[in-house]
Length: 218
Image 1 (tube, helix red, strand yellow):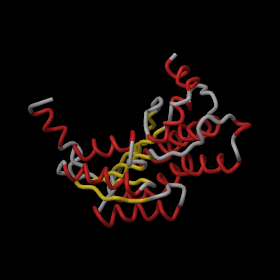
Image 2 (image 1 turned 180 degrees about the horizontal axis):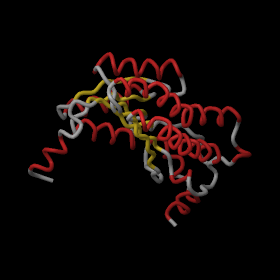
Image 3 (image 1 turned 180 degrees about the vertical axis):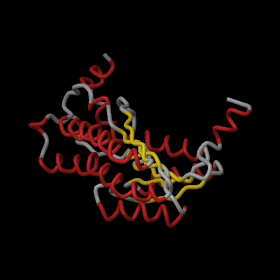
């Protein structure tokens, strides 16, 4: 894309600040890179410091601004600190993309341990709740903002051997509706996206299973 339209896109988020969780790889990484290309300063938040650092390096190599935040989104103190870091570093918060997740691979309900269930809910659902809880006041102080939560097609249709993940993502969809209803009048938009399976380090085990790969591509 060339000409005035592309120049406009490059400045669409100029002066804005975005947090993207799970941005060391996959959807989160590409989202962080896209925000930076369009002018936003980005907090690159990921549990893997090395992957987050590579995303930041790529943003900076392209002339963008970014800061690394190593975080477990299921830890409320860490999420609060992430938002504080954002406001302290860039002075405001305009966008939050709750994208981080965790889930056991290829586990039916009877095969899932309680520890796996608890961890899935803590990261994939509670992490979204905590992100919204602590980002919304900062967004209101900045004059409003937008939250995008990564749900999944698995929240909308049956997916085999993914019980904990499906439950958590279904919760993300419901929570998104609730946040949108409660905070729309305060200038906060909250929406969810529901992608299919994306090839990332976290999904290598899923795609390596011939039965599941056949189901996904059928």
